[in-house]
Image (cartoon, rainbow, N blue to C red; front, side, top):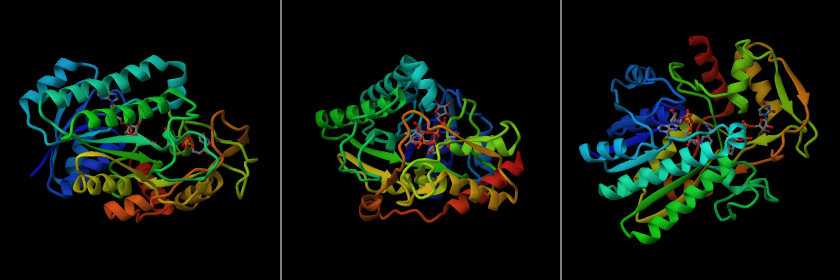
Amino acid sequence: MERILVTGGTGYIGSHTIIELYKKGYEIDVLDNLFNSKITVLDKIKEICGKKPGFYKIDLCDFDAMNDLFKKNKYDLVMHFAGLKAVGESVEKPLKYYENNVGGTINLLKCMQENGVNKIIFSSSATVYGDQSVSKFDETLQTGVGITNPYGETKHIIEEMLKDVAESDPKFEAVILRYFNPVGNHPSGLLGEDPNDIPNNLMPIIMKVSRGEIAELSVYGDDYPTEDGSGVRDYIHVVDLAKGHVAAIEHMKPGVLIYNLGTGKGTSVFEMIAAFEEAGKKKLPYKVVGRRAGDLAEMYADPTKAKEELGWETELTVGDAMRDTIRYLNSL
Ligand code: NAD
Ligand code: UFG
């Protein structure tokens, strides 16, 4: 049985992935500094799957503490979710993002090297594709050009670092997973997206509007060249996303593998509002405002490569994600 260290494991995507990993019998430890998550998430995981991961409150930037952990425990693989992800904040505080995301990952890779751990799965983002003259993005497209914020740059730099490490070390195995737009939560409603940071993503904002914490949703533009004029994205249920990680583990080999994780289907902001209203049986207040700087009109994944090589594809819909989000909101 393999033992996995999950960095950022108390966070939104990490916690959902742990549930899928437990189903496959992996042994799990979590490393997180709890900057954007709560330790109580581990109890929710226990409630859902009867098992609780080992937990280490360690910062990626603390090389010595992390290295001690690697010396004490023999890990077979690292799943690297930990990172800061607030796009707006990254524009205001770029060095914080480079230090945490890039600096933290350098520390992690050094610890892995020093302690003979060769396998890593990295949470990247569709943002590495930048602005291109297409709507459907496949892995052969160029990356790193036209990225509009430091957060996105950190993802691109880390991808390049992983490729360089693989060049230098024939035993190194990395999988880069480029997430499109993760939404939803575990169907039990016990676990969900509960960020401490200021959300600028659509779903956390919809959730805050629904709870009355924000008066109304601002729809960033209704004049895009899309069917209804609002922005179109590929919203992937976080449980499907989590399963993509399990599929990736099973197909690792020396070198770097890169996969889009998305549904292949675009959904507009207005369609997201309608889906939320239908699932929640109530109106969601919104107003249309101007476009947000740096936003693309339309972006969705070509998920063919993951289907062909990993045997993975999404099974859940935006409607499922909205149903599960409502369950989570009702449990709060
Ligand atoms: P999250 O904020 O819920 O989880 C990230 C976790 O990392 C948090 O628990 C946080 O406390 C921890 N962390 C941050 N910096 C750390 C550090 N220096 N040391 C230790 N722990 C640290 O975010 P998420 O949505 O679960 O995202 C997971 C990963 O997926 C991130 O790398 C993110 O950039 C990437 N990603 C997310 C999305 C999305 O929309 N949610 C999209 C594409 C990529
Ligand atoms: N939107 C609104 N109002 C809001 C927030 C968002 O109308 O208050 C719209 C956006 O304009 C966009 C869509 O909802 O059309 C989705 O916006 P998000 O901010 O949720 O997601 P993005 O696709 O802009 O960006 C996300 C992550 C990035 C990641 C990127 C690609 O925030 O980190 O997906 O994976 F890089």
